[in-house]
Image (cartoon, rainbow, N blue to C red; front, side, top):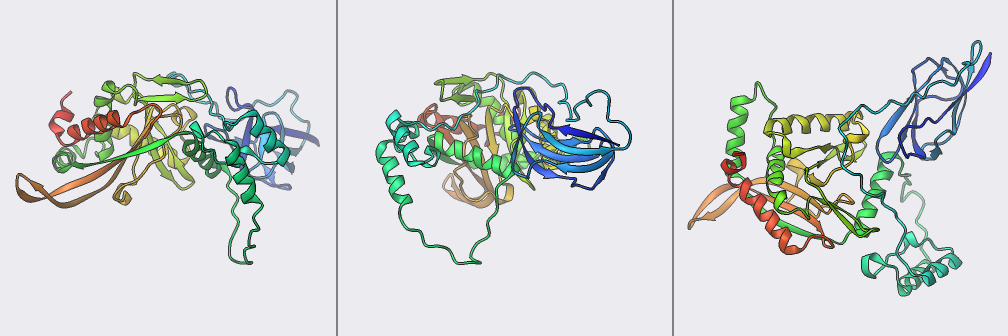
Length: 394
């Protein structure tokens, strides 16, 4: 009988820690080699850890939602016979070879902007500046912001009655989403722009293409058409196909279009990335979108497929509503949100016609994109979507 300690392996370059999101074993379990032990999450992906040995679990270390350092002990085993003579190879799945992604944006930091005086006051009062809403430029926390926050904390709070609420700890992907949204909302000065688009002709073309090629090619949804329109227009608006490093004050404009596709999964919102969308045809885009969406939903998307987008499309499909104010996928500077497609009466040439209309909502980072350019950009996209002949002519 020997003991063996399984440690959190190195699961990616530059990753120092990972969050435990699920245990598959508990003390006393008999575990076979390659049997799943736990899921851990990094900023890039969720990774399933499998057992490198067969044995009985003696102890597990860490609770769900806890961050664990790379190399820290996770599972202790009692083995039949001797422990492995050599360190067992890490069992985290190695990332598949992939085309080199675009330069990764600098990691976002959540360090609030504040003067040394405000930082000293916050330290003395034991207040986390991350909890204080700043009213200064770029969210800078001024002394009145800090004092108002402290005053609010000192107000007596009515205790909720028992049974009025249920506490749910945000862990795993839900916590990552919360952090990402908080960074986007706090650091990016959004402005929204909504335009209506007549998709009557495009819908007719889409139906005809699906009827003719539906048995031999992927079914066309509206998303490939939207991406086609974006890749046609974005070269004229390089400041929109971009990311912004607000710590360094640098906008990175990209030649290729790496389109993030906001995808709802059982675990929350995930944004897989269609890389080099400008090089793909309509059906290639449809196939890639379907593949990535399936991978995101079944948890098999690779880390490199979940990062590096330069602009994002978010759509709720038939639940798309009339208009939305989508939150920009930081550090990008623009996000496009098609809304629900509906039939409604429209005045054309002095007559009333029933047309297939859709509002397209969008949000832009006002530090990088002016309202005039955003309106021109969406206008160009609208023109292509309303003239499918022009859109499909490449």
